[in-house]
Image 1: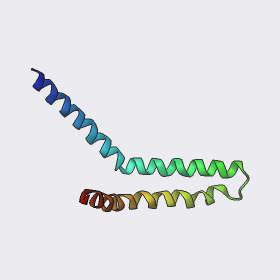
Image 2 (image 1 turned 180 degrees about the vertical axis):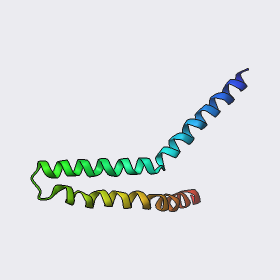
Image 3 (image 1 turned 90 degrees about the vertical axis):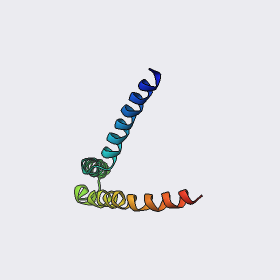
Image 4 (image 1 turned 180 degrees about the horizontal axis):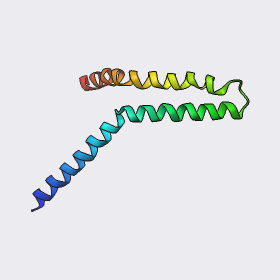
Length: 85
């Protein structure tokens, strides 16, 4: 009985991990993060009186987008490095 319960718990955990992983790599998450970054930077720039804050907020948002696109590559390199040890 205990083994069956453990198997069910492991399967449930694996399902949660798979869903979390899917969310972490989803386009929806990236778009939301870019939008929130853009809004936060734009509001901050507007609050401190920077000229054309909404135009200037594009630069950090695009920088964030580029960083999220390159992270999978660097993750693979890091995993290979750590796996050799």
